[in-house]
Image (tube, rainbow, N blue to C red):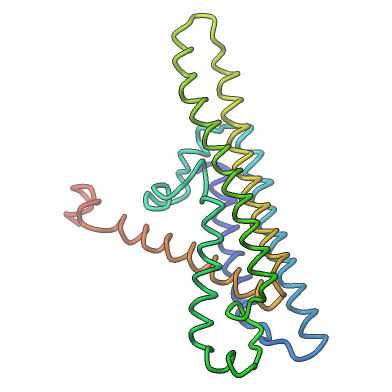
Length: 234
């Protein structure tokens, strides 16, 4: 287990504590203190998310191939990755899905003019902001994907004796960092478009999705088909 393995384990545990705090926060907020509490928790969560990306960037500099192999996560999680992490555009599918579910559950109240203030109660300007951000993110995501494709095509140059492997790996690291920067920027900008209550709900949903996929991956790893012969005989 390397240092990033240990960091990731501790970071995941702290993430669970933060999600518990978000879940216990007053929703909807009914006082200035409640609003302040939600804002503080969202900022605390985003600081934790940013810490992960700062530490990961250092690991990319040290060993980008290990970061892409990601031995600290499950095989299922690795199968869903895009350049070392989730696709930034996944954020928008989550927002729209959660908004739709909550809107349907409160539809009668909303149509009667009652504002729930949750993700099901996004304003037209918020929807427009999320849609515009999604278009921008898709363009940036596609550009990074194309850059990685060009890097992969250029690996044939390694057959040339004068090619510089370290330089190639360095370029790969730069691509991974671009992908991570886009992931962090996308979440930050989505949170900025939401109210503190909506941001709390979004961050809880995003974390629960991450926990769920990890849990499924751990369970798959324990299935009989994935056990060694010695493990099956125990």
